[in-house]
Image 1 (cartoon, helix red, strand yellow):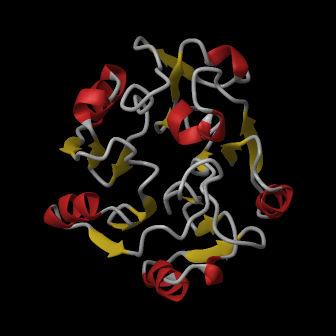
Image 2: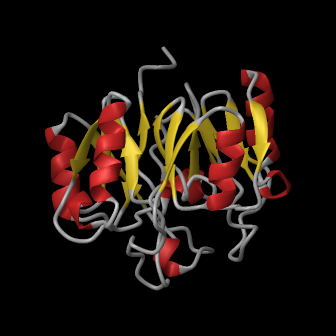
Length: 232
């Protein structure tokens, strides 16, 4: 399985992903984004079942063999123009700030029969570690309330314990990713004050928590997994 990562992801984390049989695809930086987040996959890509939505001026930076579909809106440097693709599909709900989300992504949700679940937090995927179709981890109270209201099981954890160089802190969603069997964390999960709760929650929902590398959890813009054969 392919996994899109920040091009600056810790080499040990990349090595561990490879040991689990995944092929990392490092994302180069987008020149319009602030340097600390310029190569964050969750700002640059949205993965569907069979294609990859991305920005028109970013597509040339990706491998041409990938099933790319470009969006019409122009990425901006400042919030909320930088969150065009920073949405999260949780079960049958697309969690996003609709007025800041690409129309192509909203159309995909309609095509899939998914309901748009509006939240004020534009960095929706950054703020969501998706454990399963009905289980998520987040620090954001508004996202937690919105998903709980539609029956999603939510683990609400303490904010501020994920490193993001250049910013006061990052988010648990940006520090993680799920391949369907494992929930991978960029760093050592045991160093997070809610690490034991997070690990137990993953196991409760049938997933194996994996710490990819030593050190405090780091927001790397999410690990986005894509089955390259899903469109065959």
